[in-house]
Length: 398
Image (cartoon, rainbow, N blue to C red; front, side, top):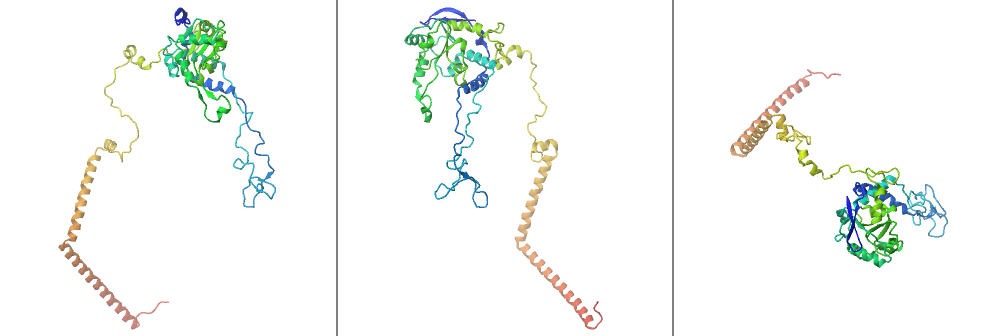
C-alpha cells in the first residue's frame, strides 16, 4: 500500500509505501499495562524521617492504673506530662504506614512488550475514529497518517505556518484553549498549569531543526523516529494520538519495524499479527459462505429447558406434570372447604335461633338433673359406709 506525502503548502508531491507497522494489532490492553509501568519510572523516592513522632521520652505505665497501656510522656508539673505518645492516634504521634524511601518505586518492563505497545500505538494513530475519539481536531487533515516531505524550517513561525497549512490549526487552537491552573496545593509543587496534548511530530535525521523550532509551540511534542516513546505516542495510556511524520521518518519505519516477511532491526523481535483479519464477527457469521454450510434450524424443540429448579409443592405447573390428578384433587379440596364453611355458618345460625336456644335450655336441665342424681347416689353410699364404721364392722389397718 502506498501513502501520499505532502508539501508545506498541503499539496501532494509523491507516493510513499505504507509501513507494515500500521497493520500491527491494536492491543489497548498491552498499551495500558506498559504505560502504567513505564510512567512509574519517573517517580522520585520520598518519605518521612523514621524518627518523626518518636522523639519523646515516653514509657508505658503498665497495667493496674486504670489507664491504657500506650506510652506516656514522662515528667510532671506540665500538661504535657502523662499524655499519650508514639501512637498514630496520639497528638504529635507517629504516622501509620509512612512512605519509605526504599519502597519499590520503579518497574521493569519487558522489552518485547514495550515494542508491541509502540507498534499498537503507531497503528492506532492511523485510524481516524480513534484519533478523534481521543479528542484531537483532525477534521481538516487530508489523511492519516499525515506525511510531510520536510519540516526542517529555521523558525517557529515557519513551523507554525506549515502546521496550519496541513490542517492542524484546529488541534493547536484546542490545546491553547485548554490551558488552566491546577486545583489544590499541587500547583505549588510541579507545573502550575495543565495543558492538553496536541500533535506529535516524528522526524528523522534530515529534519533536525524540528526539535528546536517546535519547543515553544504549546502542546506540540517532537520525537526522533529511532526513539519512539510510548509515553508520547499514548499519553495517559490512551491510544490514538495525532502524529505527523516527516518523509524520512516514515521511510525509516520500514527497516525499523520490518514486516511479517522481513526482519526488523530490533533484535529478537517480530512484528505481531492479527488473530482475525476481519474483526466484524456478525458480518462473518451472516455471510453466505458460512450460512451455506450450516444445517437448517430445528422448528420443534421437545426438550425441557432447565433454568432453575422449581418446587412442585409451590409450583402448580410442575406438580401437574408430576401428578396429573393434582388439579382435580385441588378442586375437590376447595369444594370440601366451601361445604365445611357453609355447614359451620348453618350451625351458628341454628344456635342463635329460638329453637336452638330451647334445645340448649333442655340440655342444661337434663345435665343438671343428672348431676343431682349422681350426688344423691354418692351421699347414700357414703352414709352406708359411715354407719358400718360406727357399728364397728371395719377395723383400721396398721
